Image (cartoon, rainbow over all chains, first blue to last red; front, side):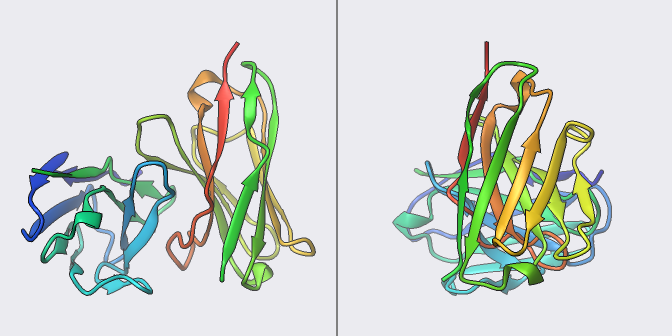
Length: 107
Length: 118
């Protein structure tokens, strides 16, 4: 099973700041990495697929990068609605696995 | 607009059974791989099971293999999850989601809560 390790567990920033979230895979997953955003009481929402492609309707301030084992989600300038939990997920191997999540909170 | 609507959650005793359903609309259901993902209270996301569009090839997490069965009725645009021998650790919100094979999970239903407790 591929283990995805996200860091940091919690990130405290202010609106307008840049956020950088990391996801590391236990073995190479090429670019089969997606990012999801989840707000309290809501279902997750796909943000990024294929490591760097924005899903439909996702603002340009969200960007993804990386391949192999190291991946990054960057939010260029935080908006109030961006404070949430973010998960990475791989579909290179079965079973599909998720990282444990990074909570992005308001400082 | 793609919509996924789960139903069938509830409270069940350990060892009991439950059947979840997911009604799909807004896309050609029979063309897509479908999945179930769960989230225990206050915890992260765990992929549970997936099923191919046709021919019904299925995939399971080790934690549910032999106890859960995923199936679909393409004539009714409905996905199912039959859950047997339920354990306390199966307590979670269960999400139905489109994708998981050649595509990532998008979109997700609103989820249905399963509570396993005596």
